[in-house]
Length: 168
Image (spheres, rainbow, N blue to C red):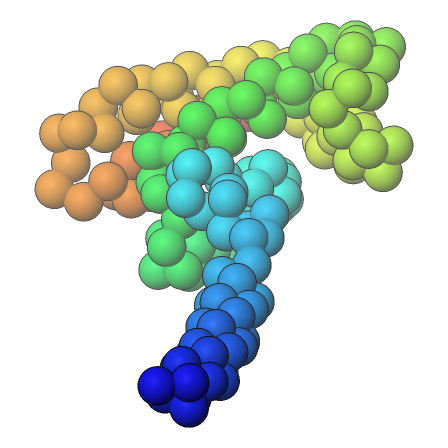
């Protein structure tokens, strides 16, 4: 009986050791990264909006539409992307109105991001950014009526470029 008890203890140690090893492997495999949390919460990286604005500032509809397609295919939520775009365009409109307003974003943007914001804001007058904001808001309200949500992003690009072509 003592031998059986001793064997049980040894087996118990092996099982415990194996369980700890398995738990450590599982913990390593399930490391939580910023990207994982962002994806789980559906948060869209503002840098995507910055890239889209770059295409719109160049008036490159083809590049903008391809960017939307690639972005959506990578798993980015169209509705959340549109909301991120609205937030960024708001910043552009404010800074285009008065460059000093960029200081108000120091808590949420790096110095490099603020410089890029100022540069992009200067690429169009404030009314053009306000027009883009209006189009984005309209498309966000209409997104549920599209068969595919990314169509709202596509129409944002088309409507904005068309509206600003007529204005110039």
